[in-house]
Image 1 (tube, rainbow, N blue to C red):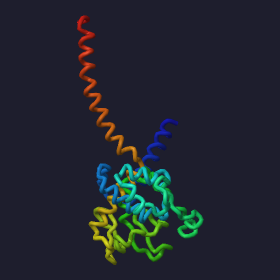
Image 2 (cartoon, rainbow, N blue to C red):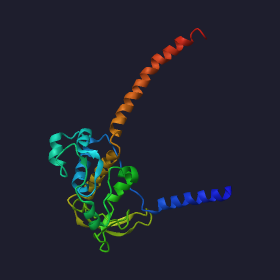
Image 3 (cartoon, rainbow, N blue to C red):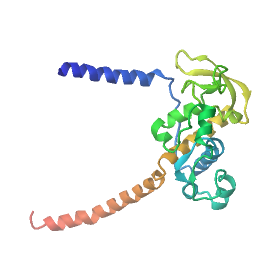
Image 4 (cartoon, rainbow, N blue to C red):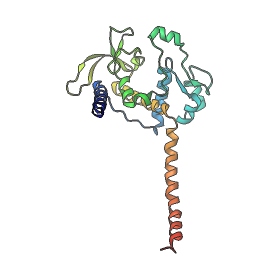
Length: 239
């Protein structure tokens, strides 16, 4: 019986490993939550291109502005498209019934997307859309086959066509059909900013937690000095 259970466990983990490795390899992305300029650019992209369909229902505009150093004036002028109150949650105005009708599925909330999918996955996904005449939207994605989401960022990236797969790297290869408003390098940098923002979105407290952690370590180092001296004084007569 134990042998049978052991074989089942090995088979299960082998299946999980094969499933994890069967998809296209992910492109690594450098995430830096200390880069406020990158987070601000990512926030602008998110509000302009993602928030029309997707919500970030666990984040408030004013909290985002406070964390990322965005003034109330800039916040109201450039970020409050779905509401007129900075204290509101970042919720899409698209009715769920319409989303279901247009896309076949309600767009998921993106607050925790970076926790669920991981930054490398998001970064690769945002750069892997290609033209596909056989899908309802006219788009497809090599990382998420037959995805319902259209390529809303095509104006920035341009339109690309899937030409094949690199036999050695096992990565999809694309051909740019129409140039967007950004060069390929600029688009990659923009998607890095957007990914960076989504990592912040999934855990905003991480910004402050890192700062608090440094002060805690400094406090413990300072506390160690009187604690050591007290220990020597306490044990002096015993030794």
